[in-house]
Image 1 (cartoon, rainbow, N blue to C red):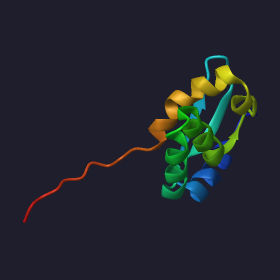
Image 2 (image 1 turned 30 degrees about the vertical axis):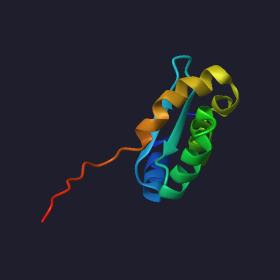
Image 3 (image 1 turned 120 degrees about the vertical axis):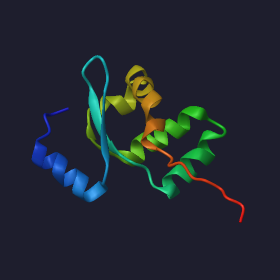
Image 4 (image 1 turned 90 degrees about the horizontal axis):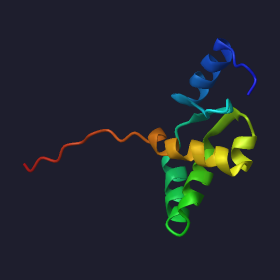
Length: 98
């Protein structure tokens, strides 16, 4: 991936909110945004029959910039896939009977 400037990062954050960079040990990297509820629903449904499909859909939907071979090279894809679930941080809630 080409070096991304602080200004470009600021622009991506302004447009997408939180963004995340995943770097593979061989040097390839990508920047992703958080998935929205509709994207999560679609990926979760598809992932019931094909677990890798969830990762593929989230990666493609949340992709902002990066080394395109991450999407096509199985080793790179699998390396990145293990971190995609971390894009979805669930806040803690509390149920209280009143």
